[in-house]
Image (cartoon, rainbow, N blue to C red):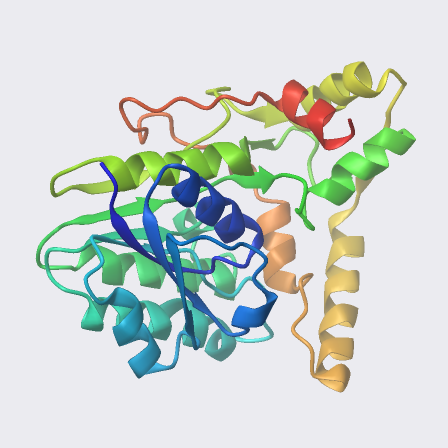
Length: 300
């Protein structure tokens, strides 16, 4: 059944895949964008609203008559709690305040929300989740993706690029475990949730089908098979990561830019368990792209 979807973050790495999948499935999409002229997609199912998450009139227009709100927008880089809270917490509350009670609210969170004490980012995602869960109607879905990769990825892709050259850089303990998911599968999950009828209250932690996740040695072996070469692992000590993060924070202050590598991000990187909880799955949806196929597609 075709639905009317209000989408934020549709120009980002995850959001752009969600947008393409929703349109391909026949849904009409109202997209919030700061720079509409830069959106390459053209479709009579797509209506673009100029504005940002702090423009109340734009948010009101975005949500008007929508069956479902898919909130993918958010801040992943920042120097302090204020920056993260502005885009991840306050903006989420604004959407919730404007949305109609019957509207299904789908929130793109992060596995980091499980560990809110690790970083300002993780804390902001957990706070946003609490706001979503506090909806009186209980008609919401929270998605906590693990590490997400794909063609336009700027975070996980460098790890694969280095392994293609024969080197695996390991942050922290090599025995740490993590889940992973291709962006196309994540987008398919969102489209599936949009099409599900009826009120729901659920937290989902999708993954690529490997229930116990991966250790770094698993990633090393799989990549060696895909790239047909030996890959040498090198562990980056925590003290080196911390030093780099503090230096990065200093330069970000001088240049007025939001850094990716921060002390909080280091704590996330070295955390021992980022394995998705398979109990938090959705009936009727299965990932289609395993890691081996995903790596081959990235470099084909």
